[in-house]
Image 1 (tube, rainbow, N blue to C red):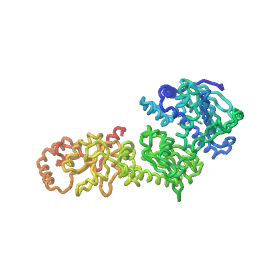
Image 2 (cartoon, protein in one colour):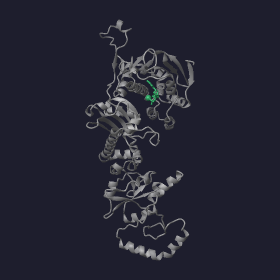
Image 3 (tube, rainbow, N blue to C red):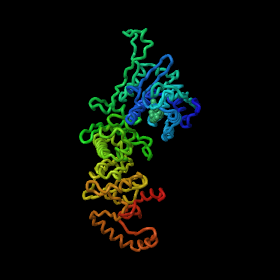
Amino acid sequence: AATKETRGFQTEAKRLLHLMIHSLYSNREIFLRELISNASDAIDKLRFAVVQDASLAEGVGDYRIQISVDADAKTVTVEDNGIGMTRDEVIENLGTIAKSGTAAFVDQLSGDEKKDSQLIGQFGVGFYSSFIVADRVEVLTRKAGTSVEEATHWESEGEDEFVIDTANRDAPGTTITLHLKSDADEFANDFRVRSVIKKYSDHISVPVMMPKAVDAAGAEDEEEAAPAAPEWEAVNEAKAMWTRSRSELSDEDYKAFYQHVSHDYDEPLTWSHNRVEGKLEYTSLLYIPRNPPFDLWNREGARGLKLYVQRTFIMDDAEQFLPLYLRFVKGVLDSNDLPLNVSREILQQNPSVDSMKSALTKRVLDVLQKMSTKNPEQYQQFWNTFGQVLKEGPAEDFGNREKITKLLRFASSHTDDPSQTVSVEDYIGRMKEGQEAIYYVAADNHVTAKNSPHLEVFRKKGIEVLLLSDRVDEWLMSHLMEFEGKAFKDVARGQLDLDDGDEIEKKELEEAKEQSQGLVERMQSVLADRVTEVRPTVRLTDSPACLVVGEQDMGAQMRRILEAAGQ
Ligand code: ADP
Ligand code: MG
């Protein structure tokens, strides 16, 4: 097979590269964060592989990332001694966009450079960001476990194609050299690069090193210094952030680490950092994001925590530790109880996983509960973003139904406003004396719910009704039986004349029955195929008639959803 070949980028990759090259001018330093993050991932992967096969560590030495600049050649070089890539992996990883999210990425571009550049990391198109600052990029990589001659050299100017060739590399790992554009030569400056590393990489658990500055006026012997190999020093803190104690960490540390685990470059709403000792030993650092990820509603979307075992990275997106209805939570779990060679299959059977899952679930629900009382405005922001996901909770997690119910927010006839701000506790606090149920109406949209004829009698009597119009609402309500002894009741269901001992109303109803007997019989026979019963009511004040669903029947909204799904 030919060793040297020229290949075109996949179409989507081309689009992306075009964007990198032509549209992203602000916040250009992020390319370095992306390359460091890839180098750190590659080291994590090698560390993990060495657990299975110790021979892979031969000749590797201490794990580190080395970054150097050459002001004359206008280059910046990022080198790691991580897992490296085979030729095929280079073609796959640096020639295409393997992830389905990228189309979504391109769709979400706003034209606002700052926002767009924040999207880069979130969509995992990190490597290509090299072309924001470079007009030529070279990669020299060798996969751990392959020989010196089996290394691969990749080179591209970004626009259409790349050249790939077989090469030599002494040790496994990857070196990436960026030939900087003339307007980006600030990144060939040692001081500038150091400050970017400090900013983004303190929490990265491997040292990110740069050559020690040679003090021209100092003791270094200049004649001797020139040919000698540089002495390297760590620029970052290089300590896995979650292993440090809370008192040592600032909000800024937490926020920076959030960006690292979530690829969301906005700040999180809040976080919870805990070390648990006892029967199980683990550390968790959980974040509630401010923004939804693009794949929140995608069944295959990424979810779960970054899993470490005794500080060794095991996997991204370990989804076994949180229920689906908390899939917006980001963070890290570091366990001392799981084996280092743990796999997704093992996770599914391990009993300590269940214990951690229920503890972490409680932790998240408590964080949300606390936010809702201490910082209602922030909670409202959370609810507006993730409320629909949380509404899946009562169906999925029977045991925590009470806690989840407290966290729910609804629109209500109290204000008639479409925004979901009313909690069940607010509702109960406003209940009429003697009122036993929590009433709600569900419809396709807020306006229909608000104008439902079923509400007329409730309005007349000043009884509040929750107005539900999210798709998930009827599903939710079918799992909410009661809260603090008050039953949830659909106003459009069954014999709902308010049995509040209103004597006048009872009399009215008797009269209505007598007066309308003939009419009711006639309607009953005309509609015989379509309704079970026609009956007079005093529930309506303005509308002449309304449809009611039987106590045991499926709700109208649910029926429409199932019909739409072809059932
Ligand atoms: P992401 O990191 O989100 O996967 P990137 O575009 O940053 O996306 O990188 C694409 C892929 O290229 C990575 O998933 C990894 O497989 C490979 N890769 C990038 N940099 C390195 C590196 N320094 N060492 C080994 N593999 C790398
Ligand atoms: Mg990356």
